[in-house]
Length: 494
Image (cartoon, rainbow, N blue to C red; front, side, top):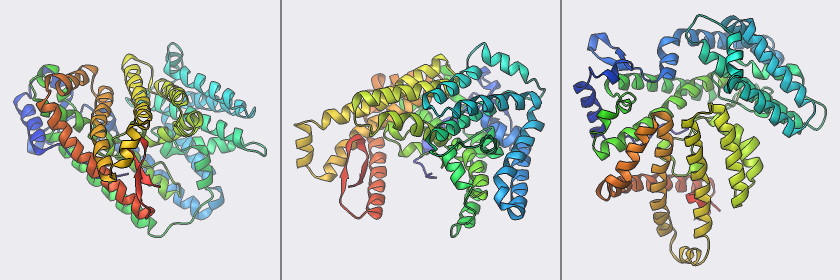
């Protein structure tokens, strides 16, 4: 993952700071702004429950569990290296049992038994049908309420652990079943499934690592050159980013401000654009840090986990837009690439994207906001292909062939700049609210035209060109052949 991003201007941050200072007693802020650094007299933005859970409320519990796993794993890797994956599974199973109780464990095991039984048939469509039906049972009423009632507890994190544990467990079981269908000789054992599913760092919060990658990694116990140095560096980097985000929460209230629509309507067009962009950058940072912490532990266990998502600032095509690379890799492997093939046929791409976002909608939990988010992102992915197909026809292809590569990149950069802001608008509604996304869209597209619209696009265009040039230079280093632009705005060495 890339750890640098083009940040909003200092002016936008100053505006957020002044907005908070002048409106600290607003009713809309009372729920999401709590006491923070007492010695500085600062209050803290606590609007993001997930971040607070990881690095404040339940920090010690999560740290204790992961530290115990690291120590336990190291001891048994030295004592019984051939059986370390079994030891990981036993430790993870005991940790889940102690944390959630025997009823939750029985529920997860029932999911494993059902999907393992279907996996023995070696039918992909049956494995998919059983897996999606099981996933629907914890996402749709009344089945989810019934299953949740089986697991009663007294601590605040129990609901999150229930849905996270069950959801990720089902997706892993589906991966196991689909990989078993590909196995030519015999079947993987039920013990293989349990060892894979109950690996503790991945169990409750992900990321999802497909079974084939997990199974292959467990046979490798050698370290690459300077691997421990890289692990240590990444761990220290994550710690530094956590401290920086904590500081931002005490001075920049980018998560709380969008919840007060009366306040944000008074902002300038540039402030709204910066606020929307800042929310997406924060969500990327959150995903990169939380998955990065887990990935550091997994790397110590000789695994090769999914990498953090690509920085939002470096995205200008929908095909690379995701905040969870684990679930993205899972969907691409078993749905999107499987159906879409080379993603060059319009109707196959439409079917592939529809199926992908249908499963994503079920994974996130069906509701109006998720439906809207899925529709627009599905449309954006297909629209990119339609535009690429259209401009590949004469006379456009002839004109592009006659012009230089630099001019071709400039023209594509104009479309990519507009595409960047559609990605921002389509995703900010899932992070904040539909009303906030509508307000940003109106300001940038209609009310702010032409001055705000064109100035924002100009700045974005410059940023996109920097990103594209960096990608071009990387492609040249990997393959020193002439770099040729390809459809979709992406460039690679041909």
